[in-house]
Image (cartoon, rainbow, N blue to C red):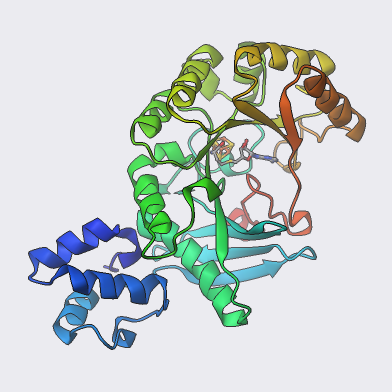
Length: 353
Ligand code: SAH
Ligand code: SF4
């Protein structure tokens, strides 16, 4: 049996675990510092921590449980890491370079049960949730890679947009956020973190109540139920009205704007009338939402969908602008290595199923 990763413990959990075994909070602080500031990869390197404490930790935990399978670098500096879990499953993590910093796109589940009709991740039914330690481990893998290059670069932003539905792995995602935000450790600002959901309304409410402070993005992709159900079968169970109510609840408690993601699929949801319908749908919330238009990355198995023409994207964008909707078009990263978020499913994973 492999041991879990210590990265999965929040600082409070680590402190409590050590306290139950007779170790003071100062030890937890020292361990935390070695893990996230000095970033050692073995307990033996924590030279100023008492040996009895290190023995105890090493008996129950590993530090990193992910191993690098392969790494692909794109011409624009994007790096896709294919990482192996202790049970042999492969997951993907992507590092993207922006003007504003370095962001990492993390995976939260092995496969995804939501099964959206356009998505590569949804082709594989979920085989399991990732642990909090495995999600934090992805950030640490990338940070240690940056450390090894030696340019003192830091992961500054996180997008939870890799394989899986984060709100279907809720508690582990919350613990993950707690660890990476912690000021004593990686200290990645809540405002620099975005979680994307396919729209699990009850979880959007719970997320709001837990006051996590990170940005919320919701995959809308269609302006009406008929079309959204065709594209995303989850809409049958949670229709747009229910989804919008949960978003309104979030907005009533947060000053931050919500991002509404909208993939443009040629001749499916990318016409001018769809843009007008979308503007109408969000008309009461125009000041509180951003629409993010996403150029579709074609997926071999979903040949019914193609990327919209540049002209349609322009018309869609202009139509929303004219309706005074705040709108942006997602910049693409690593398209030459299939590294775009939501496109995370490597040829290796495909070969292994
Ligand atoms: N499960 C969550 C988060 C992961 S997907 C969600 O669905 O929101 C992250 C984003 O990538 C979502 O907006 C998703 O709809 C989008 N996406 C999925 N497949 C894509 C593709 N082939 N091209 C472009 N975006 C895609
Ligand atoms: Fe799952 Fe998101 Fe892909 Fe839908 S778009 S199948 S929710 S990963």
